[in-house]
Length: 258
Image (cartoon, rainbow, N blue to C red; front, side, top):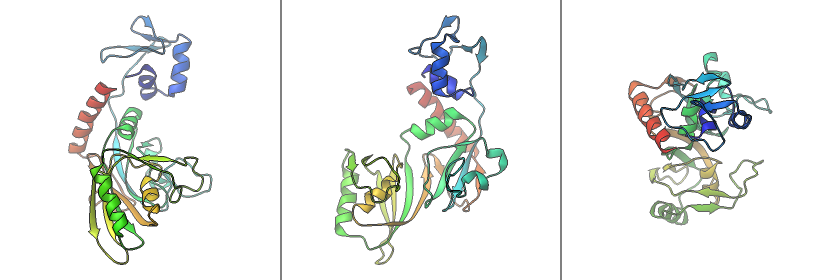
């Protein structure tokens, strides 16, 4: 693990602030003054201003069924309702894993541990979404979905339809889907289940928009080893014992690789 990452995950400092501390000579690894190139092993002890920085092994994680019409943010400049207004006040300090846009609903993970949030956000974990489209499935769309399943190469989305109106990203790289299931092949509002190992920058909305489709409903039902199951919309729950067990193993592997 990088030194600035360790400091940010286990203190009140950001990564940029951690870099400044390192450059100013205020950080040691054991008895050695640290540099920006310093790497950590599991047995290393890190000191900031002479004080031992203890790794945060204790953490709490919850799953929230975010409803439509809530912003995944601490605050909103337009005055829209945020997830923190719906959650209990004890979760105000929790950070969220990834995002769901204002018009989407579903599984959202939050935790009081920065390292956990960083790991889950950046890992190659499968996300599963249920979608409802505005018109029948065309052969062109079905062929493209099949190509997304068969190919191992990512595609570049150049259209901005389906993206946030203020987005600065004119191009988005979309990795292949891992699974696509037709839940309801209706002439009015067909429903699909799409699995992929990302899910940012409104990728799904932009992908379907290039074929002239609007996603009327988008619901995340799975994130890695966590499942929404029957959790009611607007409610939250703690990770269960099995999820904590899988999370612990996941974090061990993630730290070993990074």
